Image (tube, rainbow, N blue to C red; front, top):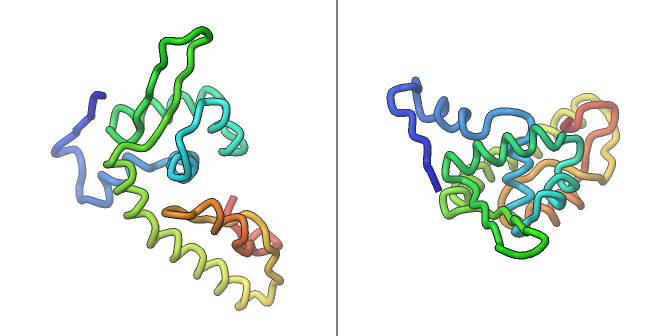
Length: 146
């Protein structure tokens, strides 16, 4: 595993963290891997809408940053599995309060707009996020996450 460090390239800690998790898909990849180790195809199905090229690129970047571990098994056919490193687990723990803030923001936005809330897939990171997300309300009429 090669960890890429870019000292001096950032203004603050938030800037450095956003460099690691920036983009539409990385946090969703982290969320999926927080639940269990996944093969590439499983991740592609778990992160709806991501292309193979982007998923592959993001996994490589997360691996280079020491967030994701790529395990290659010498089998026929070859098998590759992705999991979170201890650093990746700590990143998910750091993102959990952000997920809580997002849920509160969704609820508040729905109440202020007088829009109904539908139980569907929501936003969440951290232990039990998948179960939490499946039961979490999502705002109807475009106020939910993309």
